[in-house]
Length: 161
Image (cartoon, rainbow, N blue to C red):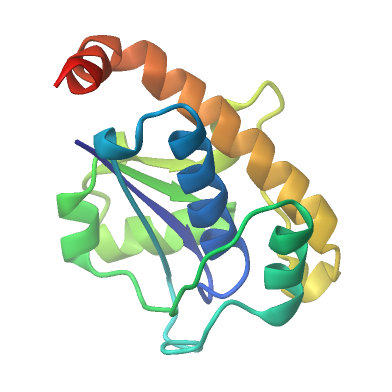
């Protein structure tokens, strides 16, 4: 099983969007049993809150549904996941600060897997939830293609059993 955690600042917009988009992609490819997917935030500002309504509405317009309750990232999350995918440079610094610089080989910006590496702008500030969705979709698709190539043998095994 490949474990992936998506991370943003508050865990009510970008990272839960990425979690649900990625879960849908994995399901559509018949790989649900091969992945464990979650999300969290670097801050405790929104702990216990659901997905921000504009983010939830954007997901629904794209046929992505699901529930989520915000939580803060812990060292245990970093240690126990194969990939920690952050939305922007600030999130990356926050996670590296949490880990004391350890585990850098599993911490990446989501869009570092795309043809156009960049940050996913925070729609809480930009108010552009469609742009955030588009960037997240691109990043999730690029990351999934990367993992499928890198972990081909393990995923083939999962499909057969």
